[in-house]
View 1 (cartoon, rainbow, N blue to C red):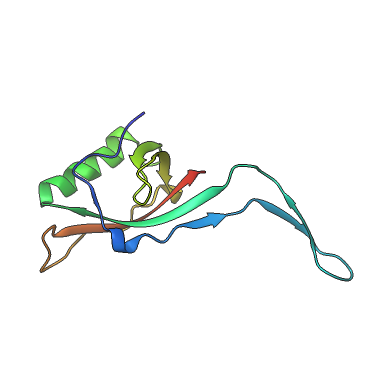
View 2: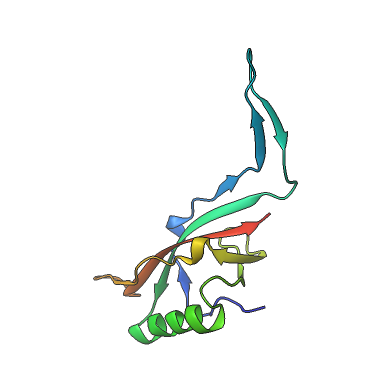
Length: 118
């Protein structure tokens, strides 16, 4: 399994994890809707901001994205909060736009949304 490259930094102030429950709801004529769990594994969405020390690292990330994981592949990375190893992928293969940021130590960033199974 391919790992997220070590030169990719994660901005920790951008971590906002969200579970995506697999629930089947059936509306009732009266009262609350019935709910049933469809899957015991929970998909977690995790928006992150990646940063890069220089343009070469940003370009290397794009190469990794296109050539190694082929846009939609899975990769391993440490969870930014817990440090546990997770297997993740980019939602819909989207990595957002790679943009320069002025006045910071690592001047290239992109905002991504990854998903993994908990």
